[in-house]
Image 1 (cartoon, each protein chain N blue to C red):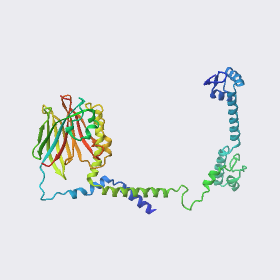
Image 2: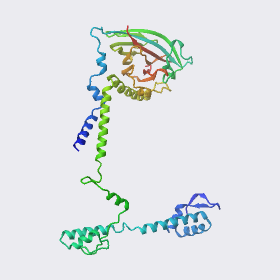
Image 3: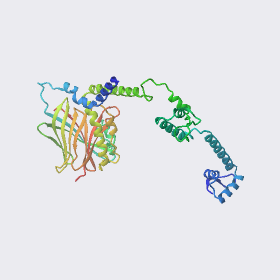
Image 4: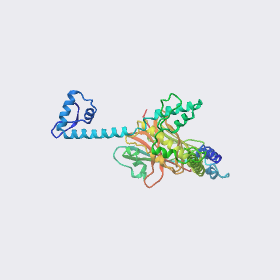
Length: 169
Length: 252
């Protein structure tokens, strides 16, 4: 009987410790590995490689200059049958300064580096409308050269779709 | 007289079963009763049903009346109570004896009217009550089951403990953050009027993908606009998914 009571108490006590709470109290494995070398210089600058697309429904299909971008064939991107490449741009930015790029609609795309850790870029990104009004602010944490999209600014009869990835300057 | 929807061979509306049962129970009023009896002469299907219902009724009545096990329970219990009361008051011990086993109704110490009858017991009940029980342990001893449940719970908790320590923190963050994003996205996508008509958000892909997100949208402020954050598959030949921040530009 005593054994059963001890077993039950142990079970209840252990069940109360969820994996999340346990892992929160244990030093992260990744942190140990991720300790930067003391003599390694901190990365304070980065580069955003941006591809600016014009999405509309003019029936022209996907511009072959865009290259292989299967995401555009999936919803909600597939709601537009035409993707036209407007430009490719490199936008430098740093911890100290915003880096910005004028968009075809008169708006602005801007980035500011928060930190780089394990080749993962913590970046503040924003899109401004033509009048300077902010359309969106975002905090993005992206691994180097991994693309993500920011879409929606109005342009002509459609919208702008921005494919973005970060890399070292 | 009520009829069912179907018709007889003669083309007349068939008599409903409910009507036949009312007939057998003697609940039909005179005009309906006469009409139904006239119909039974010609309607073989209905008369067959009546015969069948009668047979079932007879069988049940015979069976129930033959089983009188429950009829004397109240008497037996009252006699037992009175006998014990008399025994406690120092009455003749014969009264107590009779209360124990005399099914013929021995005299009790009370007013003498009560009969003591041995309670009939069904075989299944006897089997249960006669089950050998170890000394000191109750008949409904579930302690082993309780111990087993606690044992399984302890094993599961230990497994979760080990699993939780084995998963890197970054993965834990990813798993915790992705479904939350997917949920917000689903709600935001519903609310976003500017999303393309066929813009179904691929939230399932985001929730099911347990790999560390290569791109995480940690925070978004759409200001006065509406928008959503979601993930789309990077293609059939690629396991990952691509983060998308989609804002609805109202063009103000």
